Figure 1 (cartoon, rainbow, N blue to C red):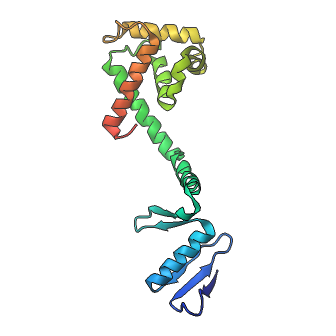
Figure 2 (tube, rainbow, N blue to C red; figure 1 turned 180 degrees about the vertical axis):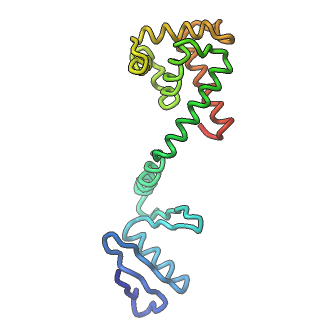
Figure 3 (cartoon, rainbow, N blue to C red; figure 1 turned 45 degrees about the vertical axis):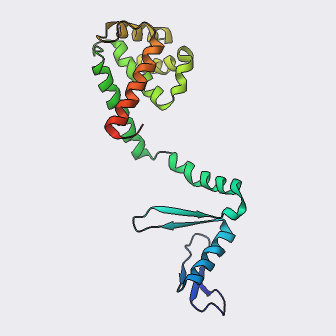
Length: 197
């Protein structure tokens, strides 16, 4: 890392040149020097990241480059944050399964039926991707095939039988409508217990 002064007139500022794989330090002793350093960084990279005392990052984006540039920079930083880390995804999966089990017990599904065990798979997959419900016979039911070694039509038949034998949902006949209802209930359970879906 090399230190350099930002000019003869700015004796209150000392900066560093950022080399590949290193950090840059800017030491500014007055407001004008701070603004000049921030402006220089914005002109060079278009964005400045600042960390607060809790370690949270705050980004300052150069809006002078236009709204498309700003939107691109925001997406660049936000999209990686949406991807769950392995530790978080395992915790979230456990939360979802716990909510599914609560809903299954709440609506009186018999634990001894294969359809009840199968029900956990489509509900979990629907929670992750609700679009699977649009074409359940082609996209949703086959997801349970590898685990239970049965065909998609057998998956649907077992689900229908479990629904028929449940104490609170036996009047409902369509598997798709029951899955949609149970998915909504699962999402509500996660929000109530854990604060977010």
